[in-house]
Image (cartoon, rainbow, N blue to C red; front, side):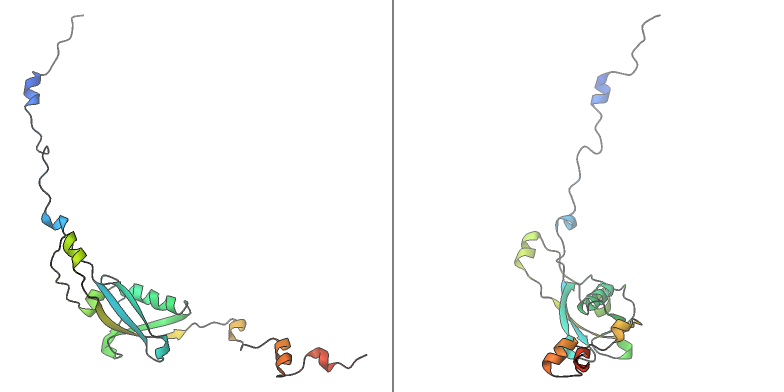
Amino acid sequence: MPPKKKEGGSRKAHSNFVSPFAEAPPAPTELSTRRQERWVKIQVKLVTWNYLNFQIRVPAATNLYIVEQKIKEHHGGSISNLQLWKDQVHPKNVLRDFSKTLTEVFQFDDSLPLMSEEELARKKQPDYDCVVFYDFSPHQSECPLLLRSPRLNNEQNNAAGAGPASPAAKKPPP
C-alpha cells in the first residue's frame, strides 16, 4: 500500500485566522453600577384593637402575600379570613390581589439614580413609610378541648378556698 498523503493546507493559513471572540467587548456601565434597594416600614394596625399593632421593615419589592404571612406569624397562625386595607379602612382601599408588590400598591417613587458601590456606601436613602390595616376571623374549631373554658386544677381551687370542695372532702369518714 502506498503511504497516505497528508491533507490540509499549510499551517500558516490557519495561524493567521483570528477568532471574533478573541477580545471581549467592554462591559456596559449599567452592569457595574446598581440601584440601591429601597426598604419600606409598614405600620400594621389591627382595626379593632390597637394593642396588636406592630411594625415590619421589608424591601419595596415584597409581595403583599409576604405581609399577610408576617401578620399570621404575629398571631401564631391562629387567624383566617384576613382582610387588608391600605392607608385607611374604606371599601375602595381593600387589598385583594396579594401577588402585587408594595411598590405597585402604594405607588412609591422609584426614580433613583444609578450609583456606584462607593456612592451607595456613602448615601443612605430613607425608608418609605406606609400603613396597612387588617382584620381577621379567629380560627374556627370543633375540638371540644379548644371550646372548653379554662379551669384551674381542683387542688389549686381548694388551696385558694374557691370553688367546690374536692370529692374526697365530701365523703364521710368510714
